Length: 471
Image 1 (cartoon, rainbow, N blue to C red):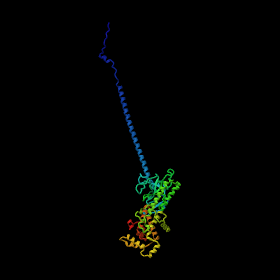
Image 2 (cartoon, helix red, strand yellow):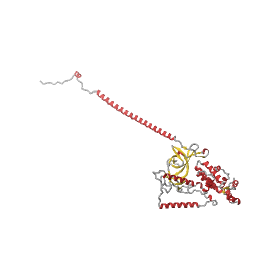
Image 3 (cartoon, rainbow, N blue to C red):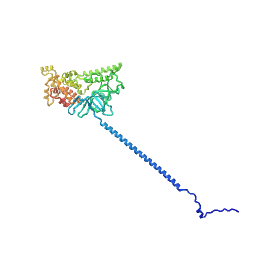
Image 4 (cartoon, helix red, strand yellow):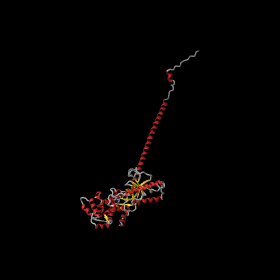
């Protein structure tokens, strides 16, 4: 019997009872989704944390920088305060002399202290220049004074660097050595606080070898610069004025005593011939200058009355003649001050008024001869200098004769003393005033006579204008 195959058909009831097909779990998907979201949130949180950390670090760094800047500013302010509190220069020792009157009165000392260092007279020093781009100035301390308000002032005798010294024909001098300086007789006054520190200056004669730079550091001086004529002179020249010559000799001696005897420069025959030729030319120039006839041939003493006499430099060739005669007169009268530059000016003042004086012998001869040379000279001077007002008074002054040197010495010394008392605080002004007085006394006989007969007091002459001195 054939087997039948029956298809099993589910009824509705069977369908209800049939097992359901397997389905994917939703809870697992949700968990994975939540995990992904959580991981994403964690990443975002991590990024935010990193950003916050970076911001915090930047803020901390900025704060540190600001703190450092504040510290630097505070340090700079403290340094500025320390610099501002720097003490002024103070004098050392006792007062050696006084000068000036009233507000211009000063006390002079031999030393002062500044910034912990001591400075004495004759010390070479470096000074702060006016322009920061310039090299420091160099000078020798010649005077230390204290003003009424307590300020310490230093008078320095200046050195010039070759590039700073002007030549007469224009331009400047070429430096042969980086250490080279030119000495000068120019003086100027500066505050003591402008002194930087001491330095060393070697004064070496032109025929000596220069000291070794490493063994003996310092500046080298072999020439003197004439600030008026704008010329150079050798240290070995021997025709400086007496006081200047003595000053240079002392400086050279100090150098040689410090360095020892320097060896001479070996010169070959050609170089020696050049030097001899220079000396001969110099001697010829000097002779030519000396042979020039003065403008007024009637008086030998007035051969130097040039309009620019007050600008003459105190260097070789500027020496006055017959200084020994005037020096001996002052010495016999015990009127020398002991200060070389003051004594030198008194000699020149004596020389300037000598021509209006007469010796005892000439005065005796004039008494016998009526209308002698003195009366003629007096008449000529009166005509040349008389004015509308007061001419008779001036004429009457010419009749008096002055005995040489008795009448001249007291008047001249009083005039110099008055000048020194009024202007000793400024060396340059003192020299300028004395040059002016010497020039006018030599060229204005009436002025010289009024000084000698006591008509003009020294204080009056000092206050006279240039035009009044000429009249």
